[in-house]
Amino acid sequence: MPYKEKEIEKMFYSIGEVADMFQVNTSLLRFWEKEFSTILDLSKDSRGNRQYTAQDISKIRVLYNLIKEQGYTLEGALKYLKENRKEAFEKDALYTSLLKIKEQLLALKKIQTED
Image 1 (cartoon, rainbow, N blue to C red):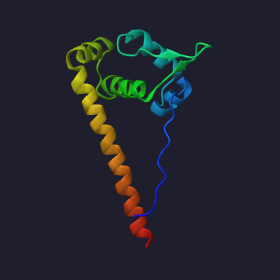
Image 2: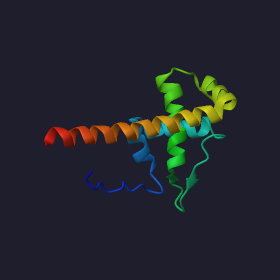
Image 3: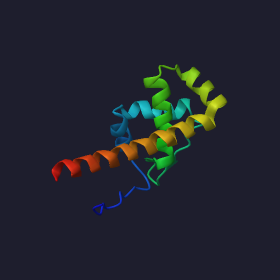
């Protein structure tokens, strides 16, 4: 198997970078930060800019899935997370792992078709 450089993960992402990841406006992320303050506890730099960690992005991914993909209301998503927080984040971790496996399999397939 050929050497593949390990992906370098940043410690902090800006609100613009996170908005691009989910293809949403930055205003939506700010709104979710207010509505889900018990879940999204973001740190800010010395200038007051939000700093998103990988864990924060995971939380946003769960919110995005519940609200945008499954159609929960804000109140419904909050209630679901209060009752099923551990399960929701375990599902997200599994989803992330499966995406990485998919990427690896597609890379292997591409290598095989090139030979």
